Image (tube, rainbow, N blue to C red):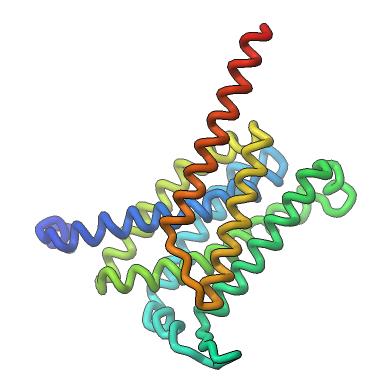
Length: 244
């Protein structure tokens, strides 16, 4: 009955499509993080790690949607510091941003030093899988809180939000493996993706401190950088063909 009512209401359809697009766009950040983390796993665990991580992330988002009243209240200031009001949402954004900056910086260091260093410090076979899943879920909490608060301003229908989350997560599952394999095959793309994570982390920190950076600027910068890297890859490919 709900689907019949939904498709008969133009306003609900527009709200649903808008939310789906928003969830997919916001999911790009999460997908890049998942791709980089899963590529640290042994090859036979990478695909299952991505699917389990994204699947659990969907369950987490649906649980958070059921607690939407609590999520919305997270925007209420809880204390003031240096004349700035801080809410629980701000603290979550700050924590997520700091975590993302730390993780991206660590990955940049490991990538520059070589993967063999990791073998001396920890075994990805024994602790990597669980560690990757936990990190995916931790960061998804940050993105979920932000997207749910944004969604509340667009519609008050929980069912529309649920459908948008399920569809967007489905798109992420389809795109996860091709994106991860592409990143893994191209070392320069790995550094570019880590640069994206650093930028996203700094954006979350700024947001938590009360300095809102329009998402359009962030995605425009990412698209421009990806376009330049695409030209570099094509140039290298053409030169390689000419040498042959």
